[in-house]
Image (cartoon, rainbow, N blue to C red; front, side):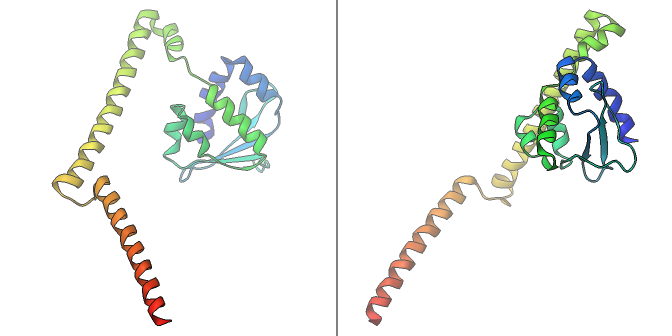
Amino acid sequence: MLASVAIAPLNHLLRGENWARKRLQLHAGRTARFRIPPFPDLALTIQASGEVSAAAKGALDDATLTLIPGLLPRLLAHDEDAYREVRISGDSEFAEEILLIGKSLHWDVEQDISGVMGDILAHRVVRAGEGLMHWQVETARNLWQTLAEYLTEEQPLLAKSMDMHELIHEINTLRSHAASLEMRVNALDR
């Protein structure tokens, strides 16, 4: 079921990017498995056309890419750091090629919507969607900042960064004093 949901949009993107299909054609017949626990695995086979299909049952995986669940939205947002967190097993060259193509694929939502709604309405819908996404990101960031401030200032369950640095400095000073005291005691023992 996950394969059928993922394959159509992925192939739609690939049809719009000839360069990506040409690169994938070099890997025709190879299978990549995507593991995103707790979801079922998604195994895709590269077709001769450069598009993908669900892997045949029992097909051997050439590469396995494992993602933690929180990584998927970051990958979809093309967060460069997220690509480095994908764990790869099997043929790393094949997996790296998939990741490289994934980094470069971009969905032109406005172009797709304009065929249905017209150019002006599609432009406005996309801008509204971008504004909504920006608002959600800002709201989440503000919420976390407010929560952190509450837990460090109002209801001190968390230590402030400056207090932690001061504590570390004091511990290091105490260690230094303890080491010099130990050296004095050893000198007196002799």
